[in-house]
Amino acid sequence: MPRSPAYRRYLVRMGISAALYLGATMLAAVTLKDKAPVSALSVAVAVLPGIAVVGMIGAMGRLLLELKDEYLRMLEVRKMIFGTGVALSIAAIWGMLEMFTDVAPLPVVWMFPIWSGGIALGAVWNKLTLGDAGCA
Image (cartoon, rainbow, N blue to C red; front, side, top):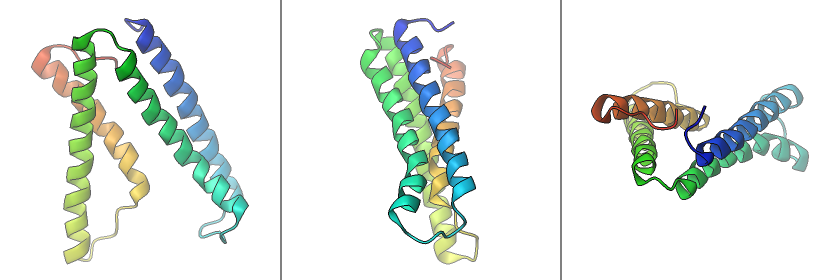
């Protein structure tokens, strides 16, 4: 059970956004073919999963605003900074590989999952260095 009301509200917001993301991604996969012609409908359907990602990021930001305990807020901020460092490092390194070698491009759609994985690694880092991982 989450430790504070702020965490409970965060989990609800994140759960709703994640469900919308999964549903919107399935809708786009079923209704749009690869490289579908640009139309108002195809753009609207293709953008829906991204809007859900914005909801997830908003849930994280809202958590930071609602956490009253400065220590818990610091744990969350450290996780997000760690995730940002992981995502930017991978983007920079892979970008150089793309520019100077013949590697396959890294689709930009993977940056949010990479960032999220970095946040999970940040929780591990918090646990190892401070003895507490934060929310998750």
